[in-house]
Image 1: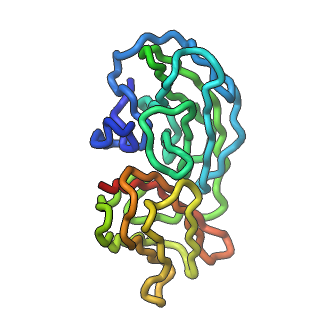
Image 2 (image 1 turned 180 degrees about the horizontal axis):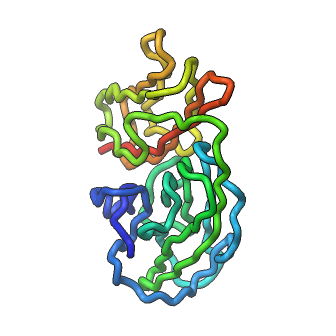
Length: 239
C-alpha cells in the first residue's frame, strides 16, 4: 500500500509524511505490469549499509515502459531512516525522472528489503525488490533537531531566510558537520557554531535566489573515541 510522500513530486509537494518522489500515491492506482527493467536489476543483493552513516543508492530505468517515469515509496518498503527521492543534479526536487535515489541514515542493523514502485507515463507500475544488510554501529546514534524528514521553514526569493537552527542533542564535542547529499537552496549557507562556543549547533541563513524545493542530507560526527555518528535529511521550499 502506497502512502503520500514528504519529498513529493512537484505537483504534490503539500502531501506530507515521508520523503519520496511521489507520483500517484493511491494504493489502487496503476496496472502492475513489471515492464520496466532497472539497474541494479530487481532481486539484487545491494552493497551493505552502515547504521547511522549516510547511505545512497541510485536506481535507474534501463529499458521498458514509456517515459517519463516516477519513483514512489510504498508503505514499509524501505528500512527505517531511508527515503526515496527524485532530484536533479542541483538537489532540486523533480516530478519525473529516469532514476530515483534511496538515501538517508539507517537506524537499525540487520537484513531488510528495499521495495518501491516505478510508474511510467501510462500509469503502468513496476514493483522491484532488493535485499540490504545494515551493519551495526560501534557507537551511539547522534540525534539531530529538527528530526530527519522535516520540511524546514519555507523561504522566498530575495528575502532573508532564518536563521533556522539545527542542534545535536547528545555525544561529545567537538562536532563536525557536512552536507553529504544535494545542496541547500542557492543563496543559503550552513554555518557551524555561529556563537563561537558550541559546535553542537549550526544555522541555515542567507537570501534565497532560486525558487524550488531542495533536498539535502547533513551528516554529523562527535569527538569521542567511539566516533558517534548521525544525520538527517531535510527539504526547503523557496517560493
